[in-house]
Structure formats: structure tokens, C-alpha cells
Image 1 (cartoon, rainbow, N blue to C red):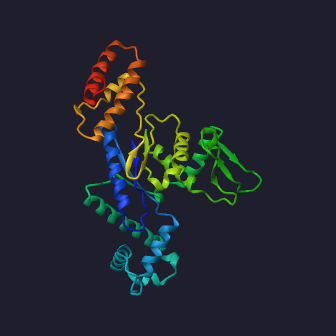
Image 2: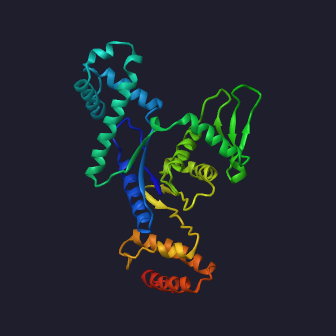
Length: 316
């Protein structure tokens, strides 16, 4: 299970909202682990966008200059650049140093973020940078996946041509533009490639935690991920609003035997809200499996565990 959360731009210090999102992400990751998932905690890093370009140029501009407003992040970054590089490099044209400096600045920013998170007892397993993803091949792959499901509407009247995901076929309120008529890829198309990259890395399930300012993105994101891999086992998505977990995901076991194999044996009582949520999710999935399974042996084990869960959760 890939659980992605925070995913702030690497262009400044983590905010209180980012830390709150990290706490929520850790909670949901532990819930999945309690239910038997092998969880990877992922922080997506957009290190190729214009925000990063601005940060790189701001750090370079601060070298040897005292006329800027104090900014702990940029001042610290400029000092690190000054201590690391022969600053005569930056007297050359920008194309001679920009990509090298971008890589350094992003690495420095992520190390700083890791330190802030570690001070709160938080950590990620993966910082997945946009620059590490082969977008060219993924764009073709994603479009082909959508076309195979008749979900692409392309304007062929020009060389570039607008490309839309016909997401209204899957319940969206509008069709979503993936590529504009002048050939520019949209944010949604980039996101589609990133989530396709997750499936290509072998994850069976994807969980994305979004905050209030991205609430309108929940429906198109769900539709898009479903379309990328409609048969993904254990595929769930959720959102975070105001730092609190909403829409706790359901489990979808393929058989009663699988459900029994995932029984969190170490949990004998629900001692906190997180465990209660997890056991409620597991109980509902187990109940569905029991109702659809005819194996007497598995039925016996399943009914016994269901009885324990009912006692823990006080279900009559």
C-alpha cells in the first residue's frame, strides 16, 4: 500500500498545516499496517516546476547580498550554497549552473524537511521526486490506458490538439483536459503519470490524503486512479479535511481465507480511536466475506473472529 501525504513544494519550510497532514498520514499508515498491509509512506516532491525555479534563482541572488528581507529558509540555503560552491561559477551564464544548483537546493530543502519531521517523531519511506519519473514514456502509457477504455476525446483539427479525459462517463461533473490545444500538459495529466508510476512500482493499493484546499480534486482523482488500474486489488483512496481523517476506506478481500489471513491477531482490544476505526473496517469486510463464502471450516473461524470483534466493538 502506497500512502502519499504532505507532498509540499520543496521551496520553503514545512508549515503547521504540513505537520498536521504528516500526523494524519502517519495515523492512516498505522491503520493499514494494523490491517496487514505492507505500507510505504511517500512524500511526492515537485522539483521540476516553476516554484522550484524561483527558489533556485532566489538562493543565487542572495549570494553576497545583504539587501533582502530576512528569510530563514532562503538565508540558510544561500549560506549552504556559498559554503559548497566556488561562487565564481555563478558569474557564468545560467545554463552553466542552473540544473546543478537546482539539484543541490532540492536536496538541501528535503534534508531540512526530514529534520523537522524527525523532531516530531515522523518519517517517510520515500521522497519521490518528479525528476526521477520518466514522464515521456508514462504520458504515452497513460493515454493508451485511457484510450483502451474509450475515455479519451482528442481534437484532431490541429497538430497538437486538445486531449480530454471523458471522466463524465465515470461520474465526474465535467470532462477533464489532459493536454491543451497548444500542446501544454495540465496538472491533472502530470498527476496521472505520477500515480501510474506508483502502479508500475508494484503497489497493489494507493491511498492519497488531501487537505481542504484540494477537496474539489477528490472526485477527479478517484476517477483517474480507478481508470489507470481498474483491477487493482485493495485499491483505496481517502481524503483528509481539516487535519482529521474522513471517509475511512473499506477493505475488499477476495475471499474469506484472505480475510482470515489478514486478521490483526495482536489486537485484542480497541484501546484508541485508530484501532477502533481499523477494527470496524475489518469487521465489515469480514462480514461480507462470511456472507458470500460456503466453506464450513473457514466459516467457523470467521464466525469466531467476528464474535471477538463484536465483543471488542460492543456490537450486538
